[in-house]
Image (cartoon, rainbow, N blue to C red; front, top):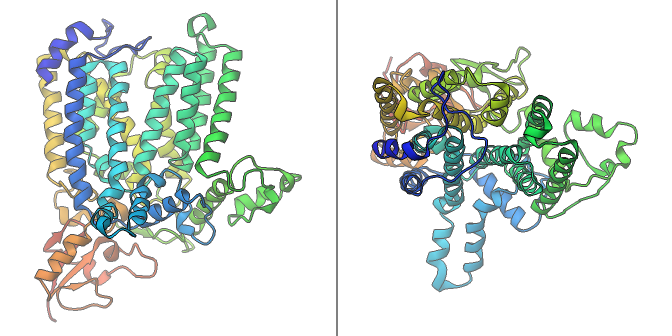
Length: 553
């Protein structure tokens, strides 16, 4: 495929500066070569197959039932979250995953359709919308890379998405993490189109896509801050004649952003409780209670559905209290939120990235960043700037201001951005030195071998820094390794080995199988198994459960 792409590049490659090998971001947007698009379709076909197998093999994870149950509530137009803290961060996007279940319920009165209803109730069917959204994310990554770096880079990025263990692991689940990544990448893509050609049409599309991103994850609201900062930089640094941005145009864009946000949030939450007075809300978090106590605040009518503000409040409350997540764990250090000396791990996501992202992908990302060193501010604003700002803001916020550090899945959009930036290493591929081209292809090969060595168990993936995979718990735990995704494998193992004890509450002898989260003490109500932590496991089941042989003393 790469040999073919080299030939195509001769006719469609984008301009290259003499002093650097990376292409300058396009000032206009063109169409990709039809044959390259065919290659993309083939890559997406492979991705769909690989992702479907992962989704089929994995057992239902810990919080998928809560996402689906809230999705059912949304479909029933009753999105209220009262009485269920586990719905705190759930959004209308979960309705997509709940739709097969709702269809199944409508078919149950008909005995002849019972088999179909059973299929629709399966875990795989609930995950099907997520699989499709992951393919759509790949599509947007391709177009981002194509418009920034050319066809070869675009196809290389598409392949990297296919082989990204963390995007596969969490993008196929019936949760919101994959939707969030798609929302960030897609909304910034259309925002860039608006910057390149600030028409009312492009402004409207950008506003709608940004609003849709809010239906995937509440924290997606930070994208409006990214848009504001980049718009200001673009307006200040580039003359109006060149950028075509005017104060009037930006005001219209701001109005469209606000209108689309209010409209789509109301539609997503069925207009329930819209225009209710703030004083009528019952808030749980101290932060929202303080806001409610401001002068005149109680009389303020909120133009948003009650469930939206309710979700933000419960997210803050749960993050402060730790009621919906376990203890924090990093590099053997266990932190309990209620302990006097509790502290979050400021380096949590950096360590998770270094250990859980494939090394080959990290190298491509570093090469991509290095190749941007001669970018001007104007080029960055129209190119990688929005992506890097969005990814950096997300990682910094999760690292410094959130207590719920429970897995790399919380920064999934940043991992998608990483792949786009990594594509810069493949810019003007045909003009690179032969050794460089071979090196880049070897990195893709290494990425494939590393990822497929865990396949289809993608959630526990660790890169080659973890030599003994049975010792992964020394570095990370929680949804990084053990999210109940291998329950089926555990059940099969126990049926073949009835003498094995599973997660014993007290020290025992013989063969013992324990989940990583039980072992290190993730669950607040269950202390760490210190009597096993000094021993070495002899085997693993799906990487997330470890087998010990405890001798008699």
